[in-house]
Image (cartoon, rainbow over all chains, first blue to last red; front, side, top):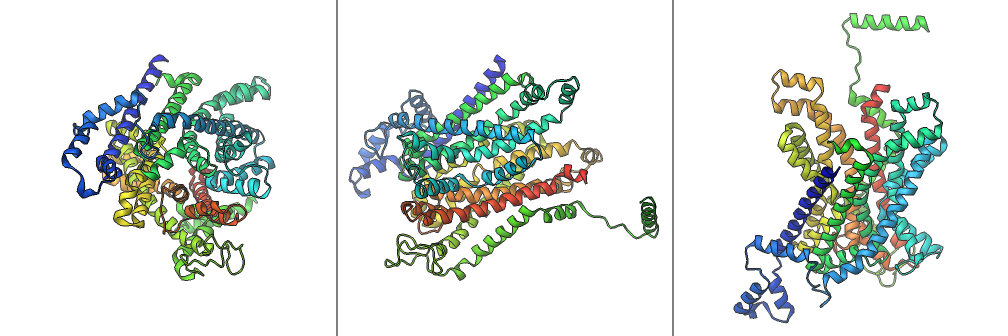
Amino acid sequence: MLVYVVRRVIYSVIVIVGVLFTVFAVARLTPVDPVKYVLLQTGRTPGSIDPVQYAQMRHQLGLDKPILVQFVVYVGDVLHGDFGTSIIEQGRSVGDIMGRGIPVSAELALMGLALQFIVGNLTGILAAAKQDSPFDRAVMSVAIVAGSVPQLVWGVVFIVIFAVQLRWLPIRGWDHPQNWILPVLTIGISGIAAYARFGRAVILEQARQDFVRTARAKGLQERGVLFRHILRNALVPIVTFVGPSFAFLITGNFVVETMFGVPGVAYYAINSSIHGDYPVMQATVLVIAVMIMAVNLLIDVLYGVIDPRIRLQ
Amino acid sequence: MHAGSRVATQELGQEQGLGRPLKVRKNWQMALTRFRHNGPAMVGLALALFSIVLAVIAPLIAPYDPAATNFVNINTWPSRLHLFGTDGSGSDIFSITILSLRTSYTVALIAQGITLVAGLAVGMIAGYFGSWIDTVLSRLIDVLFSFPNIIVAILIAGTFGVPMYTRFGPAGRLYLTVGALSLFNWAGFARVIRSDVLRLRSLTYVEASIASGGSGRWIITRHMLPNILGIAAVLTSLGIGNALTLEAVLSYLGLGVTAPTPSLGRLIQAGQVYIDPFWYQFLFPAVVLALMVLAYAFIGDGLRDALDPRLQQQE
């Protein structure tokens, strides 16, 4: 088990270094010269830039060093939690902005994940238990439509119905618990549908296995068959499914934070991207990438805990 | 019953004896029949074709100039004159909506075309050649697959958005949106193709072809490709719906196409300003997007059901 976990961790570290390098390289690829950018910001015209001052600033920022040295310096800064300062919001450190955004985004994502995991899987189990009943058919038809309609559209529909027409819930904001309902519902609904469909399929697949027939043949009660044999085995693919659905959830975070004015990481990521605030943009992309890797690592480890066969591979 | 079946057998024998070939229905013909009998898939196909036709002829049938402003006529509710109402500057929302379909399809079809070609190529190379090539490509696919397109879009739009706009104008942002949708997107496609090629490789007839000296090119074009086209069609249909969604999402967030390019995402973004009480400006473009995406989801599901070999065995 330890070897398995260590191997997974090493693999994640390699990927994160790759992400760091990509983000770093893209920032260096941009045609915008940061030195010129800063000098122009201080009121100089392109013609009046003093070459000596220009070279001096390049030296100060370390831009005259070889690219690999620059990369090592950059990684060192990031590891010390130093992401630089925001260009647009003068004087605010990127770390400070992240410190405020991460808890908000995590709250939204975790509430959405819990909603879709619990409601989705329960629906899937119920539908599978009553396979081909009218309930099953109705739930699956609704799930296909609900899962195919984009979150962007669900957000619009929920706002129009519950905030504008019925006036039950606020249109925007994140300060009060009643602010949370629509964003969490919007971020969770596609996932509820996806988990319901996937969970049902997995359970029906397991129910066809020989060991289920054996369990029934030896006189085990239906409840025991479901919990001890079918669900236990269905858990592996269901847990694996959290990985791809988490990536989907992140995309949802962007739509929902923008639509409902939730001040999370995604909100800052978009703002910084639109306004060319490179330090903030790089930090947000890194934070999100590390979050995705962490979740995938966690799932891989869980996967090994649930199913001992996987550790051996 | 018994006699009937004997007669049928005799007729069959006679036909064969006469050398007249039995009417053989090929796999794809049976799949087509199954697809035709799938209600949601046919509704989806009709909706998709309708939206494509609308996108093509939009400039001819748009009732108003989308750029025309009419400040006497701002924020009017949907009526016979303005099907989707007018926006905050008096422009006709229906005209902008159908013109937006052109942007949606331009972005989605180019991006999905790139995804299809790159995904097929990488998936087949990884699956067919195996060994270290497969290991390297699979790791790359796994990593790219785990990152949502939206992160790529943020990096790309944030880094190249302004320079591309200064150089190419609004079209520059359109190219960037296509790039954001296709740069990583082929990974998911390649993943499925790779596992399908691996499955096909172990089948007896492919092994037989390899054993009898079939060249790599022969095996790929004659044995692999025809069997992969089905799954590729399913993925492409679902992928178009996905690309339509992402274009709208990116444009809604301000990372996709920019003014004056019409886009459903930009319409939704603009409509949100006037949401209370003019919610129709926010809702109608979103419903159009939902219908298009649903259409491709239904087509994709229908194709999958029609092509699924397990269903063929049951018949």
